[in-house]
Length: 333
Image 1: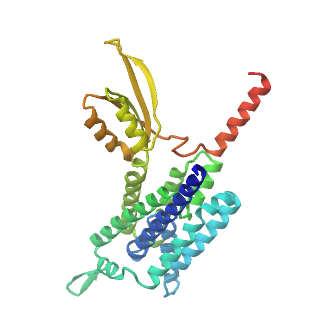
Image 2 (image 1 turned 120 degrees about the vertical axis):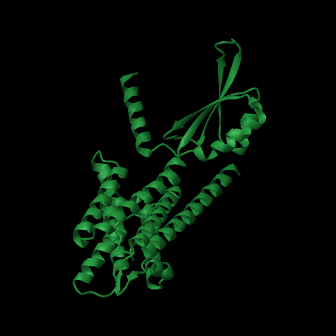
Image 3 (image 1 turned 45 degrees about the vertical axis):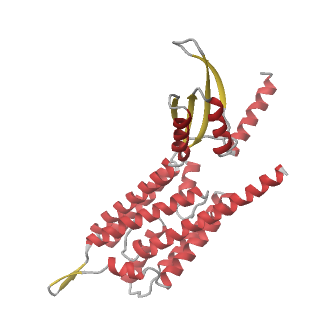
């Protein structure tokens, strides 16, 4: 029965992750189709390649919108590169979102979903007989679009997914060089913004693109990085049983009890240690304040926690650990 419940919980978690990734793709496609691409903003990512390609296409006399075609082409190309350089497992992980995102973008673009928003944001300012672009509206679109893109990325991360695209190149760079994914993403986005400014010869749009990219990064930082960090709490209280019961039953976390002695009083103490997600911090604080306002609690930030109830240890680490143990065994240590 226990094994059956665990299997059911695993399937529910997978289904929930797919729903979360679907929501992330939906928001990303909407942001690109309504705010970023129609206003020719180069902010980094696949959408920027589509904007630059559209500009060059129109420069050569083209009249149709090819941004969704370019998006599909880039996504498929990145999937092929991912398969050859990162393997089947990574490719399958990104396959769902890599197909869903361009599909949703194509639907939003071709059926003009949100066109009334785009029309108002791209409305020109008229002075006498002269009309010119209202850069304040373009800036508003860039900031709002960037924030939505950041929200979509954060949501995808929470659902353990990725929309692929240039993330594939960042992962390859991280695999073969000391440059990590975050730095690689910044490098590729910066290069695209510079290329866009050079090709399109549009400095104001380039600067708005930079601000849009910053808005995206800020939302990811607040929405995912900060909220998805971990905390370790050490609690000394006169009500240890109630606090441990809350941790075990309500938070669904294990705890460790450490015997300690008060340095000043010499009295025996029990320290309750628990690791949890930052999102649970306020609830734990409130509960401790209710049952024991005089409790002494220290909170320590943890960049990563692995093990039961959290992310499992990476397979590579486990394999290396096993090899080390075998080696030690052979040497008789």
